[in-house]
Length: 572
Image 1 (cartoon, rainbow, N blue to C red):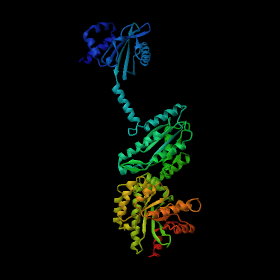
Image 2: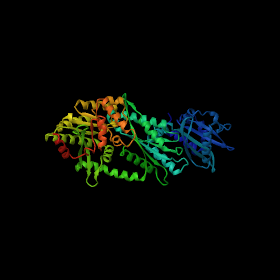
Image 3: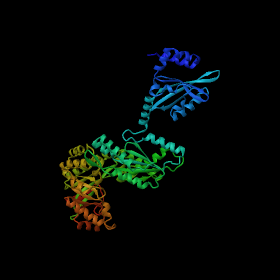
Image 4: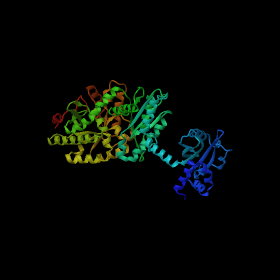
């Protein structure tokens, strides 16, 4: 094969000594060298304003389908495709000014890098020598790298980097079709599925969500996978009202997923940021949508939240609480209060519910409705839940050691805890360490938490029952469990949410709903507990409906262990 020095010699002869070119080409060795060159080598002349090839050689010539019909004065560039003809003509005219030109282009589905050099005699360009290199493999590799950099491989959606780039272009150019708003959708508790079924199942959920979003998103709007369990939809100006579209997104997410032959349920929280402020950057709008999402999550989630300035102030306060929650254990700021569960007919205490309280060293009392959602967001809920369970079990043992009649002690368990593989082991260890009698331990689970991972939750609940632990569904009526699943749940108690009890005489239909809930619970052989009983009239109503137990301020608010001890002594 010809060596590189020989090829270099040919190129030098063609470029620097054109008068020798014809003689060189007559030499068989030089012709062979040129023809065996992997690239395309060509010479172009101009006569009467027309360009034609006087030389076409190299192996790339055949690959591109260029024939010798293009050679000679009778042929011109019109035989090339129009786009290439226009490009070449512009570049050739530049070269005629005496410049060396290099450019990328495509031809016959190949990516080429072409270089044009003028041959000058007596101050005039008499010929143009060109070389084209096939860079298709390199170009495709670059495209693949660019794709990997700007697209999510799991969903094939553009990613965060592409979002930032697209937004910056739209904002800087002040285009007529500048986006109207950003909708950020964050899936609630995807970590539960990852922890329970593994990362592959979590990836399946992400893919299915992406498919659902693509189905319902109007044309003109762009969907991005922002990262993890977050998606962003850039909404164009054609959508006048975002509320119906945002609600449609949440409805789509709430539809069940079939994973491992079981139904799973997800919810999402949406934050909306409007692109209506001059001078703001792409990051500003993204951050505002993110603030709206996280503000929404600590306020219950599963809804749509539009960003406002007050939201930022409140969110900043919540962020400060994150570090305070971690320090609360260190300074022993968490305590437990206990609210009695009372027999509707005898008014005797049959159990207590352990409720966590936080007395902040500087900010005073902080309600659980404020810090529990934050604890879930920052991954502290497991530590808090373990502390509550251990503290409640220790307190039961203390009461019993004092000679008190034992009563049920109820502890609330979050959806995050229930769906962890280590939860059962943790409960067993705490019972063993504290000496707790599991027959007096009750675990309360919210209706929505067991519907997120139904079959797995039922399996966990059955194992808890096998240990002697009682189970109750808390806040019944606020979720979306079906009668079919309710029949499957191995539970002992049904707790009617206090929102129904408090509206008993204020809202039409509340009485009938409560009656139906009590009858439903008894149909399934469950004891029914009414929460939030605050008046004698309400107590009289649930007595007539044969409700079993109640909790509420009418008997007692949540109180310290010493006061519970005094109340229990009355029945001991």
